[in-house]
Image (cartoon, rainbow, N blue to C red; front, side):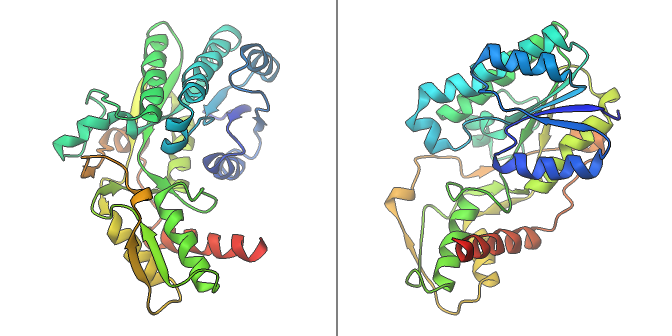
Length: 307
C-alpha cells in the first residue's frame, strides 16, 4: 500500500514524534495530518476525519504512563477507551476503506506473564492495572468492530524506549539521573525501584518500523489482525541499569532502592513472541540495544544542557 493521506493521533507524544520522522522518510509523497482534536470530543474527531479522508489512520494518543492512569483513572478510561471508539466510529462512518492501526499494549496481557514464557497473540488478556485495562478494553472493542467490517490492525508493542521519552519510564529515569550526576547536579547516587524483573525492551524506532511495515503489507493483514511487537529477549532491569552505567562518564555511583519507586507486582518476566509479525511483515528489531542505551543517555545530556 502506498498511502496518499495519513492521519496520526498523538503526534506530540514520545512515539508520535518518532512516527512523524519515519513516515516522512517512508512515504515522502503522502500528506500526514497530525490531529489537533481532543480525542474525547467525538464531534471534533469526526469532523477531522471527514475533512482529512485518510487512507491510513495511526492511533497513538493515550494516557500511557501507568502511574498517571492510576492517579486519574476516569480520565484514562475516557481517553484510552472512549477516545479510541470515537475515532474508530468516525473512520467506519466516513472512510470505511481506511486502514486503522491501533497502538495496543503488551501490558494488556498482565497476569498471563505469570506463566514465565513468551506470550503470543492467542493468549487471553488479563490486565493488572488501570492503564492495561483501558488498553485491553479498547483492543477488544476494535476486534468486535473488525468483525463488523472495520479495517483495523492491533499492535501490542512491548516496552519501548528511546530519545524523547518521559522519565516516568524506567530507562529514561535511570538515564536522567546519570546525566544529572555527570553534570554535577546530583550526588553520585542513583535511586531505583525493583531491579530483578525481566522485561522485553525495544527501541522506539523499531516499533515505528512495525507501523510502516503494516502499511506496506496491508494487503496481507485481515481486519482485526493482532501483532505482538517484541524483541523476544528478556532483559533484567538491573542489567539495563548496568548498561547505562557503562555508557556514562562516571567511575563510582552508588545504587539505592527508593520505596517510592517500588510497584507491587509478581510479574518477574514479561516477554513476547513476535513470530506472526516476522511472518506477515518480515519485521524484526534492527536497532542494536547498545545503541538504544547510548541514545537515551545522550538525549538526557542534551535536554539538561539546554534547560
